[in-house]
Image (cartoon, rainbow, N blue to C red; front, side, top):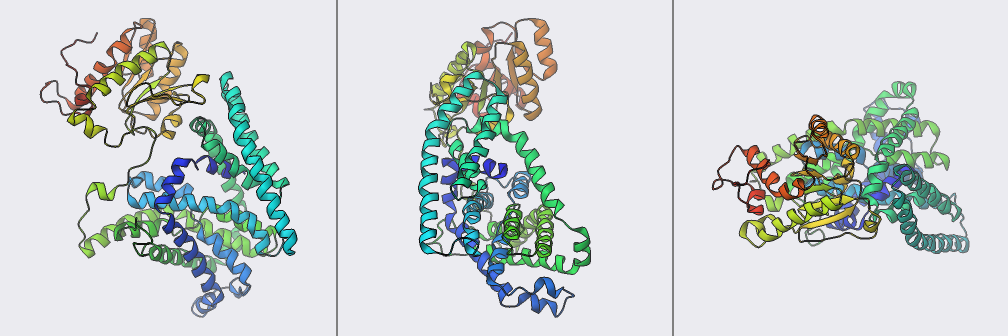
Length: 549
């Protein structure tokens, strides 16, 4: 339930636009993989393997088309929980292969919710009378549509009221309550509770609260995802696996090979059908990455067992096969890297230009934006100082280069109620958003992964200390500038990880452009004003002759 709620939070309008980049590829992957696995089961591929391998006929003798389709649908899904860390570790997130993998995984996640709704009808457990089916369909569609519409109006107001209390606990409790409540409503209308939880996440994904909810729910997501895998692991019958080890290994290898072939074939669709068709080396990466099983296969298999489509022993065997293929996903990532390099060496392809190889991530702000925590009196002055510095240079040649993507270069976060329904843009290249700036996940949710600098402008020393400690832990190399009322507080902040502490209240906003420029100069070991070639140095266009005290 909460897994689909957290997945729904990812389905913002921005990610839906990203999905459209590789939409034909995603549909081709799902349809080809489902069709090929179904055909392989029904045409006797398991019986053929039984002639050369010691397989158990009791598990491989599947002649029921419904069972074959259910097995194929479960095998079609891939694991987001294992693939995304591989993409991040290898730096493939911005490459075409990484973008295509993200789009296909998102499409698969969207595919799960309607699949769970339709499956009882597919296996014959739902009503067979067409009039009854039509009534239930209209009831679910119209009723749930009305609930979604009312929810889109009320949730924004309810969260606005809760946000004014500035209570993180209440915020989290309301988020979880909404997911459970929408699940119960959906179940009462004839849908599944997981579909309702997914819809609740989608509703909240397109509000200004999305980043804050994601950051607050993230610890629960990890715990609940762990419980989910523990529950799936509890279905792992070690005695059954050991006794049927040849069948399990054969099933895992067959699933990986079939998915690799079908994903690779899906990337070869004509260009008139897929304008963003992948190059050969990217297709190899994608095929290996998506060749394992996925965590939502457990949901599909559990529902199939509940509907008595699959015997319990067969369900346990299939769960073991999926778990095994998921476990080797990091190894598949390593194989993908080696295979893509070998493909380039064999075909003699020359690496394409960076602009062709990389599809930039659509984010609300620049990845290396300057972050300001707090939009009070001091925070507003910092925003004005930095914003005017960027604005004054945006029409220069260097400024034009730095602003090619039209992404804001300065972002401020605050939990003021006035920001609940609005995203402020006081100056060009500057945005002010709702969110707890001292939470690193809020920054990452808006696309800030490598901030050039972080300015903490909170009023209370305890809040400044907490923000400094948390942000220093997550952004080790980013310079952090803070303010303090006394030298004792300044020393504490230095120990907590602050790069520079301004004691006087007015010094931080007044010195922010020079601090930023000075830190960049120190990092490059260059104090000569004429030789500095740092983008931020050129963008600010300020002299380094002013002393900083």
